Length: 487
Ligand SMILES: *[C@@H]1O[C@H](CO)[C@@H](O)[C@H](O)[C@H]1NC(C)=O
Ligand SMILES: *[C@@H]1O[C@H](CO)[C@@H](O)[C@H](O)[C@H]1NC(C)=O
Image 1 (cartoon, rainbow, N blue to C red):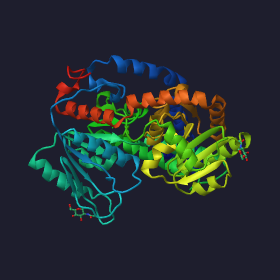
Image 2 (tube, rainbow, N blue to C red):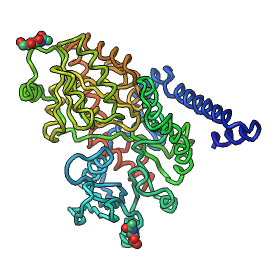
Image 3 (cartoon, helix red, strand yellow):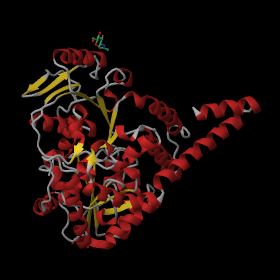
Image 4 (tube, helix red, strand yellow):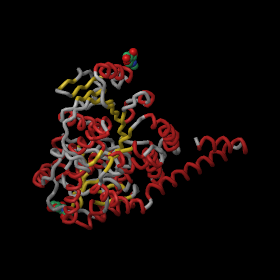
């Protein structure tokens, strides 16, 4: 709104379109710089992790006041069983689910296994027809429209019927699956944000800066960047339609309180966890994997990257940085797991690169184990990349951009790996540090990553944190920590 107002006032005074455009550009730039200063100021980065660690260890009191991830706490067993409704954009059927589906699947199979009555309103991720799923106390209702995406009114109708039969204790939505105009009438609702426009705006900014540096013009000058701002304003306005907010990183939680101005008591941080039994440190499977894909034994260091090989996951950045590194360090090798437009270009980089295509889930853990360091070049500072966490569970240090969602929650300091600003120069510098440190130092960092991941990013810790959250929402007795049943 600020932008629009400025645009009009300038226009009416000067009647000069050029001037008004310039003003809005300057204003946009100023806003971005101000938000960057807020996000990246060193004092925030260096002080708070300690403070947070400290609080997590000693915390006593009302969980709704916790300013750190609930995953840090040790929740004990309880006998109370809940009836929960869940709105999720999709439910994973078949291969290649995205992060949000995986979150819903991992969380709710775990909560159903713990005896809670779970009802999920969603559509199959393959967009084909499937019958509803009823396994034990896990109920998945598919409510698709003709295109295979969620028919929200249909989903809400089924929810309503089930709610009338026996009311739900609490309702949970994965992002805006339950839209805000409906959420307004559902008082007992919590939403988990997997990415907010404030972070997406930074993604667009980094993409713009990177493309500008490379002399490319994307979809017209700064279009995506300019479109992000009204979306952000819109989002800030409707977020208050949801009662409770769960963020998946510390930095997103702070943005909801400091920028979106939601009351602290309604903003909680619960980090995503992955199945810790699927991703384990196993050096033997790692060296078998190296042999199988034909990595020469005389190389000095193996870097690996995984995920979709597309532009906004930062592949132009890694491609450019690695072609420089490969010339300076012929003993450094790059393994690329995943498919997408950038696969072919990596293959053209020559004998130091191996492009594997998309891996079977059973191969992923072996892939991580075959690496010396896991590289995540993403230009998207939103959410929490699950690949980072999977690599850490396998005992690998990580090399990633220095976004607050990462440095405040995952790579707390240099003992966990290497961070860089999302530009080629800084990326190369980080790669050079990792190469200089060598395998022994990398292994040491990897072991620290593993123990940290086990203490924070496991599916069981995530499920226990959400269980306690919903219990606390139903009965404030459970908001107290620790209870006699907690460890
Ligand atoms: C969505 O479901 C409702 C019934 O609840 C139906 O009337 C409507 O036509 C459906 N819309 C689409 C696009 O399938
Ligand atoms: C590894 O050995 C191969 C074949 O013997 C040789 O071509 C290559 O240059 C060597 N690489 C390094 C980094 O020493």
